[in-house]
Image (tube, rainbow, N blue to C red; front, side):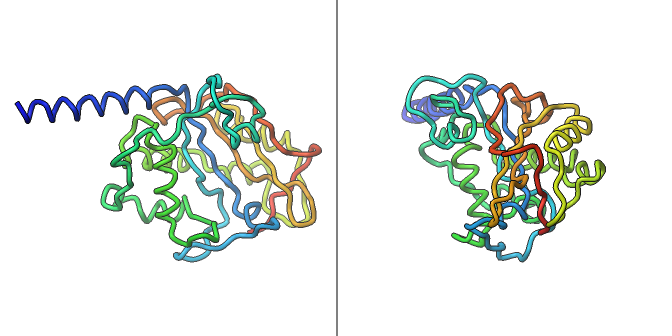
Length: 243
């Protein structure tokens, strides 16, 4: 009886987590250009493994609502999208949600190349992955290994750096490119629209910072983004700074 009761509690807990995690409509697959991350007043620091490649790096794979729910504003999302309410689920497991290195041991080398930290708070990329898993991955309906493996697969299938280079958009500290050319190149190569986010360099120039691609709930297929985001891109041209 005690065993049955314990199993019931575990099952109830799993069902509660599943119910919470299922309440999203799509993923944002977010990649950032390291040159734009670093070329700001904040700067950056390289991970313990050394300077990353000059390639778009994964920021996260984020479950998201197609419509914002009622409740407190999600300040971070509102600053990007400009929509009120709770716009994504987060921290869906209160207990036992820590990422174990053992669970992703076969992915670590690939994650280090493709999902590096640039934060000066810590050069340990595993801390970055752990944070992303705790905040977003626990709401994904995926096990940790699948969550990270699918993010890596999405990046490998449609490499943004190569896509832009194929359209003549290459890193430069002097060249600027039409924002529409960036959007068109990504849509043509992937078959899906994406949202772009810009920031400003130390001289106040607009640069391409992040690409928000939208993915189905299985985290396998790119889809047209159902939400329009604030791009923070002033003007119609952007830099892609050297890294």
